[in-house]
Structures are given as structure tokens and as C-alpha cells.
Length: 164
Image (tube, rainbow, N blue to C red; front, side):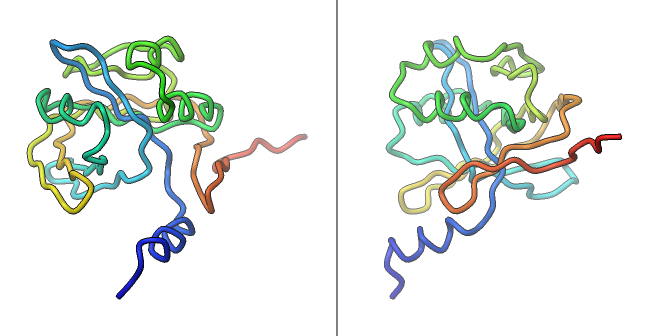
């Protein structure tokens, strides 16, 4: 049997893009930092997001049935830390500049890319919920470096301009 600590240590070696996943509803705006996000299919454009059931904002994502995945650019490490902190939901949105697309869920204006989604399926697996999300709008920025998490630390990836 594989122990949880062994699994977590092994998974720390899987490089993951860092995203802030957001939602909005009658009770306000909520968001969390996520690295468990991936594409499912391009027909129809669909992605999945995993969220810990114990998260204080979990019920809001389930009730609102919308979310936006804001893939963070290299300069957004502070945004990642804010959305994984103990700050109140509204306090978190004081960091960064926010707008919206089709669903109304908060979109980080200068995210590497934002996927605005309708949650179509919800599946609980162990300690987490998997949201299967149909993408209904996309916004890309001009940034060319992303923020990733590898071996329990942040790293930057992407194009670096050559010095002439």
C-alpha cells in the first residue's frame, strides 16, 4: 500500500502550472490557489479543477456552478500566496486587478490566460472534489513567462528575450 506522504513526495516532482480559481455568487467572491488543473478535451473545450472539500470556499463553488481558472504569469507569485493564505475572501481580491468575462466570475486582468467556465459535473474522490468545466470564454495576455510549482517551490518558465 502506498502511504500518503510517499504519494505527496512523489507528486511534488510533477511540475504544475499555478492558477487562482475564482467564483462569484450571492454570497460574494471566492478564490483559491490551485495546481491541480488540466485539459480534458477540445471538443467541447473542457478542463478539470480539483479542490479540497475542507476548503472554506468549497460550498460556494458547488452552489455557484461557475468558475474562472486564472493561470498565473511569472510575476504573480504574491497573488498565489495571497489566495492560499488565511485572508478573508474579499481581502484576497484587493491584490491584483480584476474584471469579468461571460460568467461574471473574477478574472485577473493580467493573468497568462483565463478560462471562464460553467461547471458541468462534480465528482467527489477522497478528500477532493473534481469539477468538470465547459470553457465558455478565454482571455490571454501578452506575458510570455508562466509560474509553475516544482519540488515545493515556485519557478518561472517561458520565453526570455535575448540581449542584443
